[in-house]
Image (cartoon, rainbow, N blue to C red):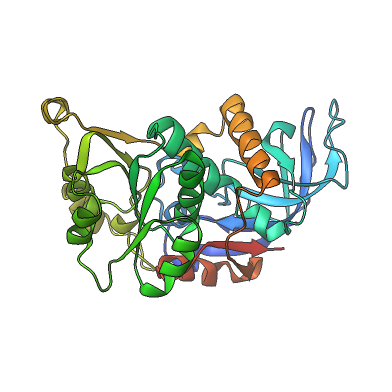
Length: 340
C-alpha cells in the first residue's frame, strides 16, 4: 500500500508518500481499497501540528473521509462484503491506498456518484448537519449567515439550510464563487473582495441573524456575535485564518492570533440573549449512533434529489503537496480529493 506520512509537523515539505505492506483486518473489521480521499483544511492543520486531536499521534497519516471497495472482511464480519463500493469516515488515515475500519464507519455509495464525489461527502456534510441541527438548532424561516460558503462545509450548509426551510446568506471571497452559492440555495451572496461585509450583512438582516456559521477565526467572530438577533447563535467549527499558509509553524504568530480571539462573557451572553457554541466533528466520529442517524437521513435526501453533488477537484495521491497548497490558497470551490 501507499500512504501519506507526516513524521513531524511542518510546512508542505513534510508530506511524504511511502510504501508499506497492506494492512490486514482483524476481528470485526474490514479493509478498504481506497480510490479517493477527501481533503479538508483540518488536514492542513494536522500537517502544521496544531490539531489538538492529533498532537500525540505523529508520525501520522491525515485524512477523515474516503471512498473505495471493500477488499476483505475480518472474522465476524459478513456485510459489507468484498467488492461492495462504499464511502466512510475515520479519525485520520484516509490518505492511503488501503485502510482498515469497522463496518459502522461506511455506507454504500449512492447510485450515480463517483468515488471522488463520495469521498468528498461525509466529513463536510456531517459537520454541516451537526452544526445546523444539533449545535445551531435552526428552525424554519430563520435567517442564517454562512462564511466560506463556496467551500466544502459551506456548500453543505447551503443545501441543508434549504432543506431546513431557512433563509441563507452566503459570504464568499471572490465574485466567481457567487453563482454556485445561489445555485445551492443562497438567498443573497456577499463578496468580501468587493463589498463591505458587515454593511451588507446589516442590510440583509436589519434585526440580526438567527445563526451565524464561522470557521475563519478572530477576524469575524466578534463582529458576527454583535450581529446576532435576540436568541441568535454563533456556531464556531474552525479557525482557518489563524494558521500560517504554506510556511513552517510559528508559535509566536499563533500566539498573536490567539490573543485576538474574542472572550465571551457569560453575563453578556445572558443580558443580550445570544449564544456561542463550538464543536469539532471529528471528536464526534466515535458516536456511531449519531453518525449512522445523520448519514442515513442525508442519504435519503440524496435519493430524493434534495441533496446534490458539488464540484470536485481531483489530485493524485502523489500530488498531495499541490492539493494542500490549492486548499490553503483560498481560491478553490467545492471539494478537493486525492485519487488513488
